[in-house]
Length: 328
Image 1 (cartoon, helix red, strand yellow):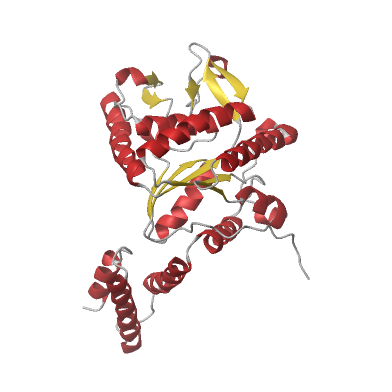
Image 2 (spheres, helix red, strand yellow; image 1 turned 30 degrees about the vertical axis):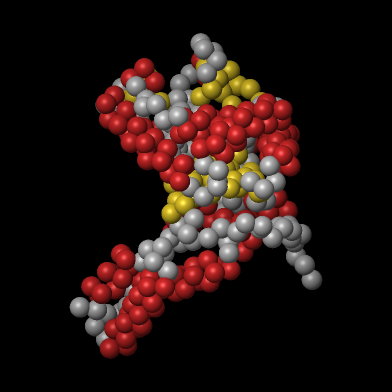
């Protein structure tokens, strides 16, 4: 007996590998995926501008990475003694203008290079709504708690998203012809928009992604994170306390579905081996000097050395160093 309605995910025609260099941009769910991949030893660059929710802000950030002219003082603004960038999350902000510029430009330089050398780009759209500054019509990725009267709120159309991303995809192909792109829609509900507008917003995102995937089937794939949350996990026990964000268990489940659907069989097997090593390192013994624990750690070290020797791109050097120090 089935207790839910499983979402069918087509087999990936170009599965991910642990060898891939991956860049991820988008909503807070992008961070969830990125943290999971990073924890499993993937080479990942996550949200180099911070959390981005709408397609226009993501496109603006990618365009800046493609043409990485450094940010200057006029790109920042000061509010209540702190310098911010409208393109960045507040984690880049600082009470020092120079430090704020150093923060954004350091990441810009690094991520611009990563984008040109990445084999995978994961994009997570959260909402079709965006904010523009009234003074100049500029799209902002973060309002930094400035008064709402300074901004106009707008809901993007399907056609507007397609038009902007069609040109961006051509630019990405010119710079990095081998880049494969995976789109997702965040399962986080934007309840401040209201139930109906949230659904309309998600529908716009889904339709735009579907149109882009139809145009570029060899380069673009889609992972149904939103659908899994709405259909397979449609029970409030899979939500966090705010009843809007997926719970830790739900995120784990969605990531597992992603792994099973989009990772190569070799990479899945390698990650399972890594998990055993990681679990051993996290174990806190009652008697660390006991012969049985030392034997267990020696076996774990042998596994780590074997994996690193066979798959040198799967960097276990720090874990091997730690295991050796335990066994001294």
